[in-house]
Amino acid sequence: MRELSLPAAILVGMGFGNSIAMITDGRYSGATRGPCIGHVCPEAAEGGPIAFVKDSDMIMIDIPNRILDLQVSDDEIEQRKKHWQPVEKKGINGFLKHYSIHVSSAREGAVLR
Image (cartoon, rainbow, N blue to C red):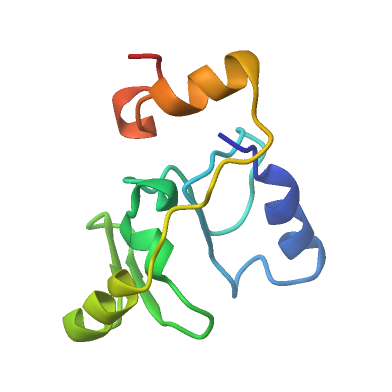
């Protein structure tokens, strides 16, 4: 799972710390600043909702109620799902290949099954 504190820091450094949220299925360290939401599950690689987000889509963030909602119609999401294909894992060998095949989702602890 990628560490995404650096891209979050770049957004803050560019002056977007209060105006742009970063949403990812990756992880952040405790040093992250600004509106950052990580560990979105199921992950994009599993065909989770984050896989269907496109540039300029609106996302509603309700922090007190812990709600994250992609403001796209159900019909549009279904159309996007029809064209989705998982990313092919090329050039991975040895333990990393075994891990990529057998690791669980972050919501299950990202452990080997």
